[in-house]
Length: 344
Image (cartoon, rainbow, N blue to C red):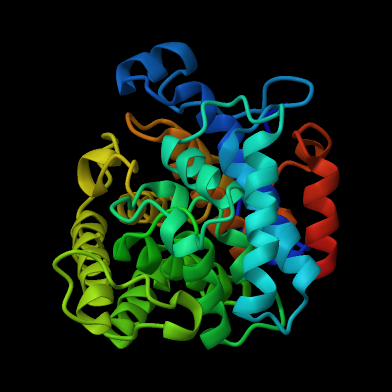
């Protein structure tokens, strides 16, 4: 059953925003998984010009995006609100390694995550296990839970977001984009409007552009051709600001119905996954299902783009954003519900 949302979902009742964001992540992941690697023309041939708009399967299957998001969420839940690097790192390590070895890890997982998890399983320091040159979207496809933990101040949120990214993706842009993604979820959960999000993220990026979180990242910055911690992290924030420029340019013009990836990137790398998801979420800010469908109707990393779009829209509008019957039809619904209830 396809349910069209009419009118602003914010006025419609169920504002369990942590649940809305977590389930939104999974819904977008499930809608985008079948369209990944397809051209826009092929997606529209299969689903029509509106793209996929309903879950398929009993249950509708997700990908490693949701699986790894749950791994992060479980680690944060176990650590509680007083998270520290010493507490969180072993919990994240254990969760990532368990995911890597799970028989359910059969959804075409990213090679960067698998290679890094191999080093983590061997007991390497995470700064040595990480893939230092990678800024793939695996760094921020799973970071949504960080923005939902009620007890985190913004400094803790930033440190946790960058740590969970750094365990597998050691590139500064992976770190910065993950922090921005978690920050976006946090401010939406706290009541910011989707349409205000690009400006809020730009201000955050400008503010943080030379802040290296040594207490969370240790000596990760010590990589070839890097002179100091500030210049290391500044590269990541610079690339995030550059893609936000592209986002602003796209939003300043009319929506011509073309592939969102043409404006802000295909989403295989962290900052482009963030920006293209934001483009879909902001453009369709008053129609959550259409936002997911638009994100899934993309020629790039459709499941990650749609997953992040769902996380943003769900954080803004809560469970009211989504068709009521979807929560019984999505894979891992029980785990999503447990974390959502804990953080709502």
